[in-house]
Length: 174
Image 1 (tube, one colour):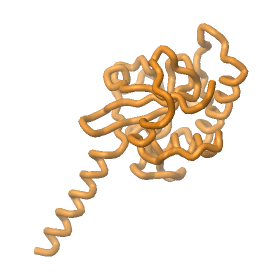
Image 2: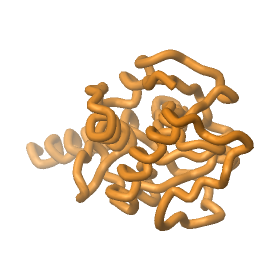
Image 3: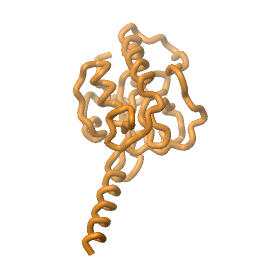
Image 4: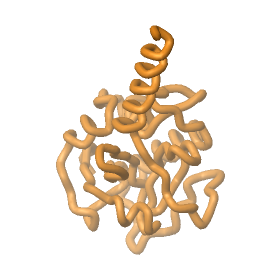
């Protein structure tokens, strides 16, 4: 019987990771994004400060684009959504942020969706206890580590993200 108990414990641990980790299984995106962020031009140009933030985020995206999703991952072999945000803000802005999506959601100043600026965090509730986070890059687009496609760019107008949008916060002074 010890084998059954250890097997049950193992399954419990694996299930717990899925219940409390990042979760993002969007409907099929209409476009696979490759290369630079190539966010379409917004109705108003970015300020000098936002442009600087955008360039740093684009550099981060280029380094990590296509990296597979791995719950708890923090390297090119695999990274999860909160790890992607954690590494971006550490490497691009010298900020030390919490490592989990829930803890990240309690950082910064809450802002309305229509007030989003480049570098803001966007949060989603993708299940009863699952949350997901990404970094807004302008014109309704965000970069994140998706469970299905790894590090990628998505649009906030995708029906999946519209349905699961939770809130946004600002960590950088814009």
